[in-house]
Length: 211
Image (cartoon, rainbow, N blue to C red; front, top):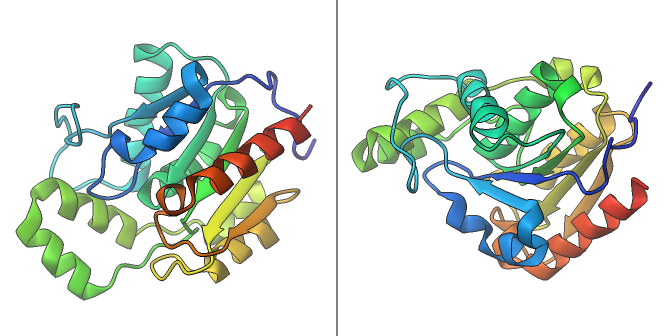
């Protein structure tokens, strides 16, 4: 059945940050959703020790996140929300662990994330972890698998996002059956910080529609 309603509309919201960031980027969502929000750090980011080799792919990240969610935090049927790399991880989880999830929220991301060579070069001089993030993004591509996603899905994009432009979100919306698309004006790639109230409102509305 396409887009079954979440098993629990109060499903925990797991927030996954993008390349080189940390869980702190979700501070406005953490405040708004309170005890139902679980922003996590990827390995080597924020307060989480690095447990990964120098080269990984998005599915490797998804497997680590799966462990954090279900073994460490012991959450049940969460909704996975992610920005950029975090959104790619959410997509990978939606494909690999669908039966354990209630939905996806894809924020400023895409089904394919090619990275400008200049960004990769700059990341090499920043840190091994940041370069690993961008390199994982650069080889990520699930454009031909989006039709497999059967979870309720909300897609959010800043109207002025240059890294993952609106056309990326539109493509996902066109290929994920029953998905909801929300374009936020006056916002860029980090839309959840540029327009936190509008993003939170979009999530609230979408959650209410799952009733």
